[in-house]
Length: 290
Image (cartoon, rainbow, N blue to C red):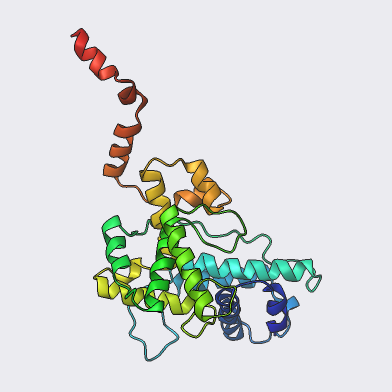
């Protein structure tokens, strides 16, 4: 019912994001068809339906709608519930702005709050193993290694801005551009073996293969985890949070903070290194007085 509207709303979105919007709306429609099959028009949906849907998602068992799937008894994660509700919020806000619906049924529905679980990130040793996995004698291997270096050295997303990269990584990127110009006619930097723009999903799959070859858990290897690695290493090596905020183009410090899990030992080391008292040498002065 809303496919044309979703297409209009999703102009400029990545293909993966558009797919998430379509799936998010489909999940809601399938539930609504069972909950209240008499609803035929979007204008009939009220806040009570959305509250009931949030309650349903919060208690729904994973894969309960898939008969052939083994049931674990787990419910949907709080993140999944919040993410699906965020999709509906975006859609209903859009419909309201376009005057397709009068009252906005989601305007008084609060977004669920949950604690963000800190995720494991790559260590420097693991990154070294990952970078050693591609066969750089091939174009695809050299391209993948260059892209991994670029992801680990800075931050790449769809927000247009200046992003600093190190001289060594820049040298590898220029080598790749030179290789492209010899064999392909394209303005893109990261290409397939046939000269077409490299698809994100294809690169994700190759990352998983490299992770397995390097003996690294595949769940901690993804383009997004490279961002976590960069953020964490930037701060651990003495970078300040406000500069990092500008580099990764986050809207708030809280968003950046979630990318940087810190355990007690890391906090102790950072305190010891950057403590103003330790850096002033007051402990040594006191010893001399004694």
